[in-house]
Image 1: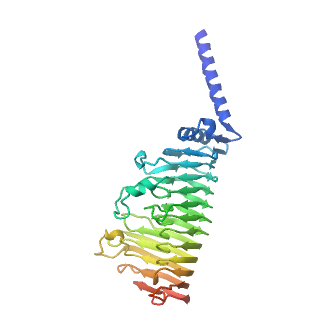
Image 2: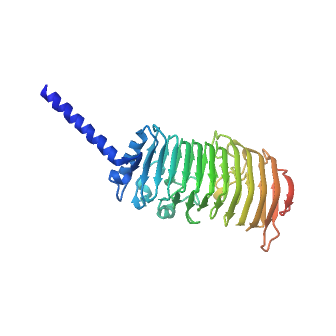
Image 3: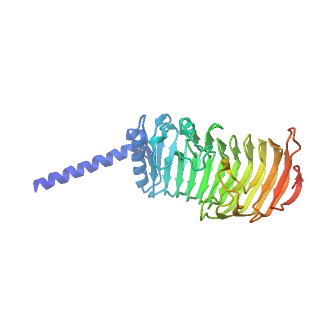
Length: 393
C-alpha cells in the first residue's frame, strides 16, 4: 500500500514538473523557442514549442526572436486545437548540403486551420551549392532539391512580412490550400538561381498575393493545375521569368485552372511578362477566366505571351498540337517597354484554338533596331480595342 502511495506521489510530482516546465516555456500564449533550449540549432526547440502551442485550446504564438539560427528539416503539422501563429523575427539558415533533406522541403506547414506566419525574419535556404549541382536548366526530369517553405492543406492562413532567400528549389509551394493570403511577402534570389520559382500554386482555391516583392531565377509566380480564384495584386516581379499560368498539359488528369486575376503589378527585367503556357502533344486540360490588367512592363522580354507550343530544352514532341483548351482570357491596360521586338505573342493550339481572347489598351514600346513593337497571333482571333501599339494581330 505504501509503495502505491509513493508511486502515485512520484507520478503527481513528475506531472507538476512537466506542467511547470510548459508554463515557464510559454507566457500569455507565447511559446518562445529560446525557452525550450533553442540556441544555435533550434530544430528540436521549434518542434517542441510547436507541439505545445498546437495542443493549446486558446489561440497561441510560437516565437523565434531576433538572432541567427540553424534549422534542419521540419514539418509543423496540425490539426491544432485553436488558431496558431509562428512569428519569425530571426534569420533561419538551412543546411547547405541538399543531401541532408528528404521529401522535397525544408519547412513544411501541413493540415493547419487558422495559421499565421509573421515577423521580420528570413528563411535563408543557402541554395548556391545546390544551384551549381542542378541539371534543371537542361533536363525536364531533373532531380528536385528541397523547397524553402511548403504549405500543404492549409485553410484560412496568412503569411505576412516574411522573407524567403536563396531557396535550393521553389521558394514556396502551395498545395491543397484554401483561403491563404501572402501580404508584404518578399522573395529574393539572384537571376542565375535555377528552378527557384517564387510562389508556385497548385490544386488550391482562394489564394491572395498582395503588395509583395519577388525577384528570383525562375517564375515570380507560377500557377499549376487545379488553381481556382487566384488574386495577385500590387506585386513587383524581377528578376525572373515573369508571372506564369502553367505549364499545363504535361501530366494526365490535370484539374482545370479558372479564375486567375493579376492586377496592378510591375514587372522589370524579366525573361517574360505575363504568360500562359501548355505543352504540345501530351495531355488535355482546361484553363479559363484568366485576366491580366493594369500591368507595367520595364525592359521585359515577351511582355504578353500565350504559348501552347511550350517546349523547354526541345525535350518534347511537336508531332501533335496542345490538347489544353484555353478560353476567356484578357490582357488590358498593359504598358511600358519591351526588350524584344515581338511584344505580344499569342500562339494557340491548332487542334483546339483559343476562344474569347481580348487585348485592350496595349501600349508597349520596343526601341531596338528591329522596331517598332510587333504582335503575332496564330490559331486565335483576339478582340482588340483601344490602343494597340504592337501591330500584326
